[in-house]
Image (cartoon, rainbow, N blue to C red):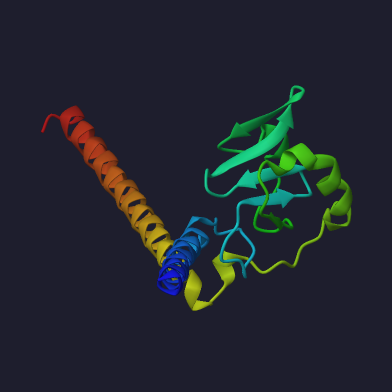
Amino acid sequence: MKKMILAAAIFLSCAAYKQDAKAQISLNINIGSQPDWGPVGYDHVDYYYLPDVGAYYDVPAHQYVYYDDNSWVRRASLPSRYSNYNLYNGYKVVINERQPWLSDNVYRTKYAGYRGRGGQSIIRDSRDVKYRDHWMANKERQAYHKEIQRDRKDARKDYKEYRKDVKRYEKDRKHGH
């Protein structure tokens, strides 16, 4: 009887472990949440450290975390002082740790040599099949922008025709027609 109970306990713990492992796998892949400017090769990313600006990017929350007015703040974009910073060209360090900015002095020191470094392969430029959703999103964005450009071109053309009609009307009115 003891052997049966022991065997049942082992079986149930293995089954529970297997379920936990499945849940862990599904929770640890966030490729679709990573931005186009993120580096390739990571199935899961919590944060990017941006050595050029000394800021962090929270991938799941889609927010930047940076030091401002003596405290760490979360914002949808970097502050205006970094308006010329190009996320696609700057180096990004993947950090999978909770609140990495609390250890900012460690990361700032450890990755100081990455400031100004480029050449990192990014998701936008990857042809790896796991980034297919990013390609499709880019293609859809490009098609949308082309459509907008066509609409603007058509609107300019229509406006020019309208201006010609107005001038023609004013000319005819002036001459009594």
